[in-house]
Image 1 (cartoon, rainbow, N blue to C red):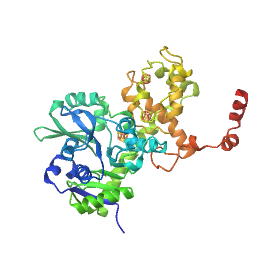
Image 2 (cartoon, rainbow, N blue to C red):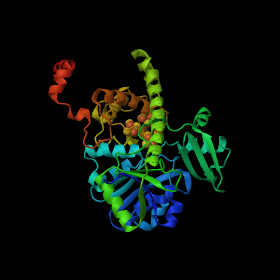
Image 3 (spheres, protein in one colour):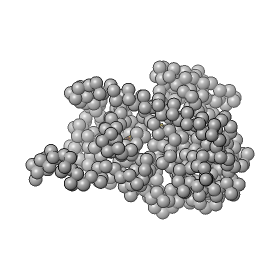
Length: 410
Ligand code: SF4
Ligand code: SF4
Ligand code: SF4
């Protein structure tokens, strides 16, 4: 039987040197463009050669793929809005997209809502151990590591440590716990994120399980993934060998440890709120939400907020215009619209100028919905959001109060 688990690396020495872990992803992207498997590649590249500033880039020339080589932990860019808003949901072109698990999940959620044409995408998932905000990271490198941030050429998260490589080839490592105690934590959403390997993408690529070799561990997750990798290997662009049972076990252990950490962190957050009375909980959230200056940043950054005619606009009559802080309905409307599909990507919180812990709020409600409906957003394209498939009959049986409210309104 054909395996789904491989170690792979580029056959091109130059790509091996520039890409991470043997350059398999870079080689695959180059192959996809050269052999017209896709019309374009959407990936992230550094801006001004800074590891703290990155932009999504659309590439059609295979000669430019090297610009996207390597992994960036200090520039959490989302690719999803680019596909949805600027590439017309991939309706008119085939695109290979490199994506973190939260990007891949948001793409799947949008595909369910017919906002993205999944058939035209080849999702190259990148394992993710978490990311830092660029400002936090830059300060961390200079204060906690005592190094010039501009001297940084590589960073990686491994075994609870953040290891940085400097221009002169030397490395420094620090414990993530110790960094957190000094105030240099990963983004809050990343700390609670249990999706470390993006199995909802066509392939999931990363380092875990490579036994320290210059190779990428690839898990093939779809027929499209098989087709692409077979073609790249036959063409000689990629060298692949089936992963050994030891390598598979090594990867499993790394994943389990990372997921357990994330779940413990999430549980800690939920426990704090669970011990509050409903009144205390309301006070807790109100104290945060009343800082809102209604800049609409959270709505505009959220990959799942895609309505053209948004209920938060004053002309819709739900929230009055010109009020700051806005009525709590401003937040509650957005919360009720995205809570079932929120993928904990953190984009809303990243842009909030008032540092409101928005993802904690969305995640609290999302976890409740997961518990009630057993619905995990962004995992299976064939599993529809519960609130879109609930029937009138189910509403009437399970929530008689809703009938009363509806009847009273009528
Ligand atoms: S939310 Fe998860 S997938 Fe997204 S950047 Fe953070 S750790 Fe990675
Ligand atoms: S609500 Fe925030 S965390 Fe959830 S999907 Fe939208 S931007 Fe991402
Ligand atoms: S980004 Fe923050 S301040 Fe701006 S509207 Fe959203 S919650 Fe309010």
